[in-house]
Length: 441
Image (cartoon, rainbow, N blue to C red; front, side):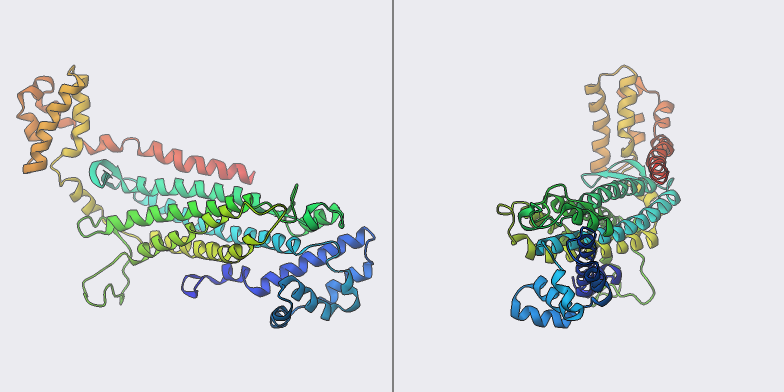
């Protein structure tokens, strides 16, 4: 990924130095296991740890001749280890090293992404509680529907990203496997105990059955989860972009002193961060399809997946890490306008209470069809001509025959729509707290 959208900690996981260090540890741990089994001398395993080293530039130089990255690495390693290097990579294939390394990198990346989600969840919870009772209009089809609160909007996002966190935990666990099974995965030239030893040393579990490669359904699930997280980022970013529109302006991205919104129009304050997040979400999502297509390899293995994973591994995790961090910053500094929310609530002259009037008429004995027609005829007048919805209803003899004027007026109460906010907050944040306590205990 380009430096503009890259944070150092995540980028370091995918650096050549990090990759070759993981390769070295896999090979060295495998030597330990082989020595324990008596397959290679203990002194050889010790020499690998004591003398083992590598240089990225030298590996690249060797690879230009060998056209094989793992052989280039092993050759450079042997230059440091000396004669004992002949015992390195005993019974192993390149896939044993590459696949195990890739999964180690994905696990490390997951830990950063989980920390990102924890930070985002903390920010969402704080802002949700802050705006729990700030009433705003809810919209369906982008049209005013009924009142909600801005806190509920943020609580919904919290619940969504809490689910994302649970999915990522599962995906991390599913991809955290190790395969040291040799050619076509039969352990013909290497004992399964070596795989078990390397897996434990690298914080992984042994793959139950590999075919020289780790099955790519695991990776397809992993990148699909990252794509879902990206879609949730886009959903919240899109909500903020809509709320920042001039005609709405219920919330907007923080605009710092000295910031410029347009090269041509000095008055502009554009939702540039959330627009950027929408684009970044697309980049993450596009990694899911090739990961799914990687599942169908030929027979026991081919390398059609290799070039794909060299790209999507760093691209998806680096981009998602940056996007989660940016979204947390947007929410943390989001400027919210409760007064504008209230003004927007009143724009339709009370039409937002139409359902409550409809239900009250049915409770008073009017059929639903007749009640709908009675309410809609006044509502459409307000929609087309403006005016006060309550006044029109109170002037409608058919309506007031079922609902006296004072009873009608009592239906136009914002508190009616927010009376279950605490219940919803308890469901969202109480359930998350209980799950966290269970995981900790």
